[in-house]
Length: 473
Ligand SMILES: Cc1cc2nc3c(=O)[nH]c(=O)nc-3n(C[C@H](O)[C@H](O)[C@H](O)COP(=O)(O)OP(=O)(O)OC[C@H]3O[C@@H](n4cnc5c(N)ncnc54)[C@H](O)[C@@H]3O)c2cc1C
Image 1 (cartoon, rainbow, N blue to C red):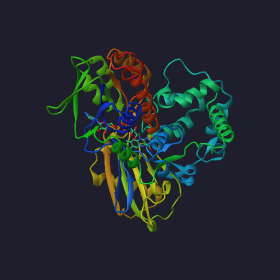
Image 2: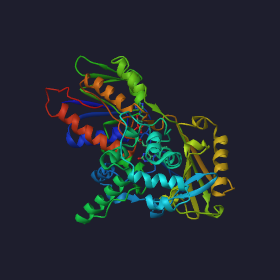
Image 3: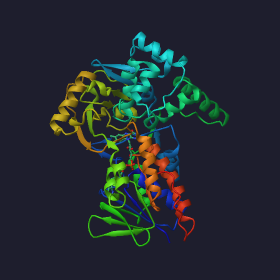
Image 4: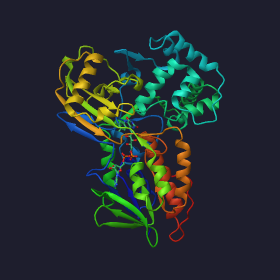
């Protein structure tokens, strides 16, 4: 029987293990996780009556992979969607004031977020010929080229801050926002492309009698994202081993040997590294130093999450909505505040609200190193200015992610191509996780599903003849 070892039980490793088990039920599979709990960045706790997410807050309706996974796990009835108010009401924090972000291009033309010059940039985008450059363009370059510098500095920056916590001058458009690049290439205008694809989605939904997917709608589970992790872990009982830090991977007489921190090691026909790219780099350094170098070059930002509960009575201007973003270029101490109990009602006890601040990101990594008191004071000061809340929270928790979100910098595609070339020379070795082809939960679950099919095809259908055919990491 073929043996598979997966390193890292974040959502990528767990989903991959689950899909492999579904495809090959009697597979000899081991999933090794260094932490004492599975889930990686997904971490939900119930504390003092507050249901707190310390990592992702949900997944968008843009792809079906996570919802399909929930369905396969029997969790469909546990899915909850974010409130309509949180889809409609998102804010920007600019010049020490909150500005409501309009929904759609018409709303932008009527809003106060942009000057007339900025609004003209939006109109001009519709008629400006789409000529994507040959080089890997940064997100900032793209926004300036299509919409002008004001839109790049406000909306482009806010988009990057909200999703990647990154620097728009450094992030690659094609890797970080592939849909925007596709829309320009296919429709000549990004706005026209998104409007047409939304119309097409509505048309298809009408034709099949379904409710159309709503761009920007967030989903989670009644008891938080941890429910997904717990369900996966339960299905993987016997295969999942927590508290094992893998230190290296080397070739065995046949297949691979996975070395744990102690004396323990595991032999395998197939090894999948589902841990962060720099960890994978150090595991593989002796086998292929060049591959390790490419992997180690994928940068990560750092983020601190500060969750806080306040009595409703202390919030003088409550706004039902998602929360707000302070674009990175403003270099504020807080990247954004999410109004968690407005996004998912019921996450705070009655007469209380639950918020969380995200701090740090690519341009303010220093903030993540501040001690708890200083960090909390900084967040409270930002909340005083933005939300007019003066009192201390009745509850707070701080979590620091030192390798929070991988940054797909300009050159990421070429790096992936080089990684793929090297990995193709190592039959039985695969990479998965958010470092490569998308940082959202949906990307991780989608990639896990695709990889399970590929591994089955490459290695698990025939008991004797492993095929080294592998095109991407
Ligand atoms: C603050 C924050 C907010 C986010 N918000 C959202 C959101 O709202 N929506 C969304 O879609 N995405 C969001 N994301 C992104 C999303 O959470 C991640 O991309 C996703 O969870 C990554 O999953 P993963 O399995 O690829 O990696 P990870 O979750 O990082 O899992 C990797 C696992 O490998 C383990 N590991 C590492 N080294 C070793 C070793 N040597 N041996 C064994 N195991 C090892 C780690 O302990 C970890 O469990 C957010 C991320 C952060 C940090």
